[in-house]
Length: 362
Ligand code: 5GP
Ligand code: MN
Image (cartoon, rainbow, N blue to C red; front, side, top):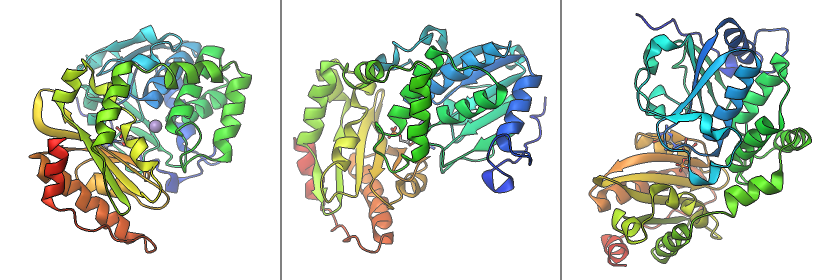
């Protein structure tokens, strides 16, 4: 079967505000939610708070609309999100049978392949995303780079659909909002972020419980690994980077998710404007998952895209092939280019190979 024809609904094509008289992407998505019955809801592999929170909220919204909604992720829900209401509804799989569904809602993915799930490309795709690197790969596409999280877009849909937001749904959306705004600190944090937080707390989200479960319940292994990563930090002018190898994870019986957030410590350093964290991928020696972060107008999504990845201006990622020194040089080179675009920043000095070797010895 041929995939359905794509409808372009990028923000430039129309009014983005739901309920406006001109057709908006949000209206178009709602029409398709209303006219189909059997849905699949998915988000990206290695799910974060917005992926898990928006999938759960979308599932509940669809059920409230009288639809069926299976929820699927390619990777396990990280430990810190396993207290979310109805999280047990999310199944883990890497293939789907398209004939079981009328449509798939893909949340928070700037390409269908980011789901890590095979079979979606043949389905009727509703693409709801907020990445700067988002594109019209779906049948219907709603991409709003100004949204602080995809859960905020799900909230907008629920309002438009007249679906009441339950306390459970509010908790899921609040988790997405809190994590995607870096606890209301990232540059994308806006008045709307706080308005949404206010509404979600009014509707029953427990801000302190979410903070405790997500921020203050990390396994001890994560702190040990953080110690190793921070002991290897290399800072050259406005650029900081570090890495973790699989042998480090094995040493602490840690998992990949135990390195989440490490990069945020690097970007917290005074004077550092761009940061990279490389993690060797399990079972793929000398391949590195790489997280990039920046401050202000330094655009790390460009550096990530140049390395085959993507993301947002201040938070992006990619996968790099080794050897290690080649991977490091590649990503630091792209970050240096982005730093140079910002006129008032010093150009980072070239990093000598001995510094990589120093890093390897630690
Ligand atoms: P993180 O560093 O937390 O894994 O990712 C930061 C941001 O970059 C997230 O919004 C994530 O979706 C995006 N991102 C990370 N890795 C990739 C990648 O390989 N490809 C794309 N397109 N986006 C990525
Ligand atoms: Mn997000």
